[in-house]
Amino acid sequence: MTSNPPASLVIELQRLSRTELSAGARLGHVVLALAASAMTVVIVSLWLTEPVLPLRTQVAFAVLAAIGMGWTGFSLWVLRSRRVMLARHRQIAGRLALAFCGVFTGGCVLLVVAANTAAARPALGMSLVLLTAALVLWRRAETAHATLLTRRDALQRQLDQRPD
Image (cartoon, rainbow, N blue to C red):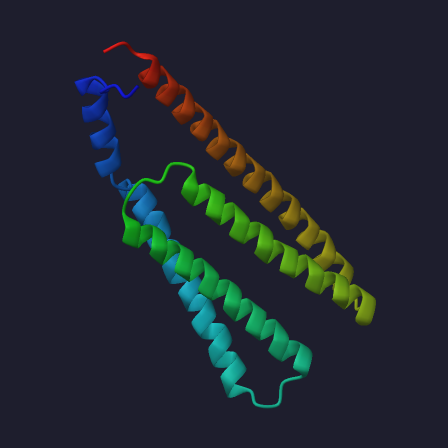
């Protein structure tokens, strides 16, 4: 049985679907896009202007450039959509942060095992701190998203049970 939702609910849902990112959120994503793209340009410029870099340095530059492009792409996607996506932005940003921190931690582990230089262990410690923070933020985003989906389903069930 399909029922029509109350007009006030329809109006509120339409208003929410038209809501755009706040000025602060837009500014934050513009800053992220600029910072990530600037970092990527600097890294790629260094990489291209130094022809005799060791292989591990070239790999590190490639990974850093990919990370910069990832954050730039994410921020441009958010700015292009211009719509509030509730927990979706946080969920995707958390996944990116977790993946990039995981790559950083993996690189630090390789550095400790292969080179064991003076800076390797502190870098590994810092990468583990960042990985833990990224994991916590990602879990919070996933939980918030799941909570919103549960709420949406409960509201849908209430609408479906309304008598005409």
